[in-house]
Length: 267
Image: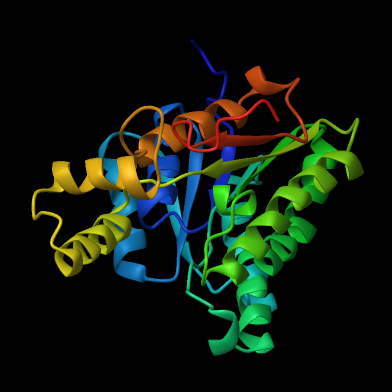
């Protein structure tokens, strides 16, 4: 299927590793000019170079999106590099534990700024040109935690609930402009950080030191899925890439759970 993405321009935040990296590469493979963003120069540069080595078009930008000036500079670099931004994939975020009795209100506010405020900063600089051009895509990364919060991660779940609501709000505020907004809520996905986490948990609980057995244990007992395994970054990226394309013109204001059936329901 030709997704008609050749020549489109995308900013993918937090694309220096994990799901963001997979999204940046997937979009580039479809002919999108990709701005790779991160806060760590070495990793960000490696993803950009990987895209360039395969014949794709990419540039990189470093910036802390909780800072107004740095967020504006991220957008400026992206717009100068490729002449504009047609697609914003808001993937950057953090996932720290925040047990209620061991965290402060400021801890929660700081995480909200990282996971939600960062998106607002970018929207203000990016969406006006999308509206002017009559076409644009805003895709936010939520989480199944928005629907089923986990103990000790309440702040994260709250911010991801906000991401879902924000996606719908954007869709309604810019209805009829050609700009669409959707949210993707992944379940457990095996990124390098996630694999390291589960290996540590497995060692602590004497599950196994074989990754296949660890994954099977998690997918059966911890985050039971209907497919018997955990997700892969590329599977999230495939859906993002479709939603970023003109083929998704009739999809707007939706939240897509991609969790292997972990939250399977009719709702």
